[in-house]
Length: 227
Image 1: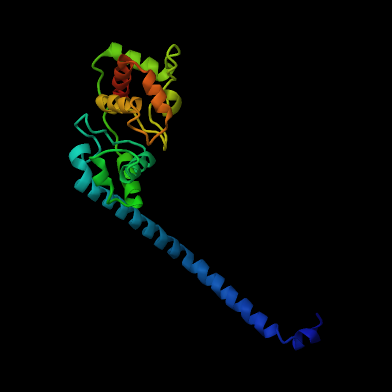
Image 2 (image 1 turned 60 degrees about the horizontal axis):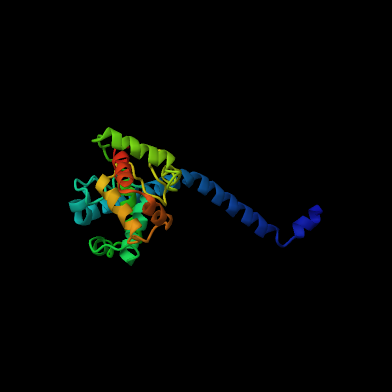
């Protein structure tokens, strides 16, 4: 464009103004960006603190009598939740609420919970760690260890470690078994065997049906010793 054309261009002032405005906006954003980042960090931090506080409140109101304040239940009737995978806890609560997993005790406790509260409870218990239990019968524990790591090729029982991991830590979809009450593990295996628990992977129905009473007991004793 020639000097004369630029001088006569009617859009020239508008473009100059636009450049000035955009330049000022960019400089302003650059100046405010650190402060904006700090505000966002504080907001997320505050939200996380509120979520954790809400989880503690629910535990105090609904959970601690059976599961303990830190998820380390003293009674073998109720599972230890300390260290359990957060997603797994939230899923079980949702299943109790919907009735997909049957429990006259847990359904009324889970029904008032929102999805966010279930996730908060999962995170709360996942952050705790149960103490390992000392072995009461070393021979039985040895049998359980072999079953967990190797399975039983004669009866078709696969190694539990294949799905639950070498240390029984589980996955977001599968439960942590390490440090769990032996009686609780035996009870759950019995429910799988009888098809009374149907909200999780159906493969457990087949596996549980192939375990002998001794093998079930041995597995439960071994898992209780893990941390």
